[in-house]
Image 1 (cartoon, rainbow, N blue to C red):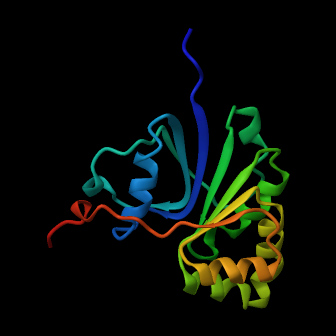
Image 2 (cartoon, rainbow, N blue to C red):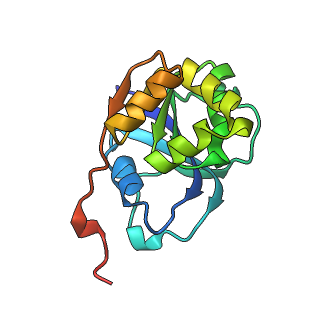
Length: 166
């Protein structure tokens, strides 16, 4: 009998910007999983080659509760700017565990210090099962902001061979 794959709903603002090589490595590193991408916009990404993606769906806001009914096991939200903040907030009510990934100091600092995003971000952080960041300073910032779950530093690792020579 074949075991069922672990299903991940991956949320990003744009999929894929031409500079998002670390996202490509993340997706292709999850070969044992079924990855479905939800994004506000999809950009041409053929130059990255074949990706480990089951489906692509537009996400412009709204409830994520249907993901549990559809058999997803985890929501993974890449906080690269404010475009996916609602997904972070909606994940609280989805009934699924969720992971937040902050991609860099500027985005992390910028959102925490802007009044219009503080509430949404604080709630998403407070209820996350885990958070990953790229630096110790981002980790410290999120812990001081109210994170109670594990906040792990995971620097962006990148296989330099993925970057085109031009």
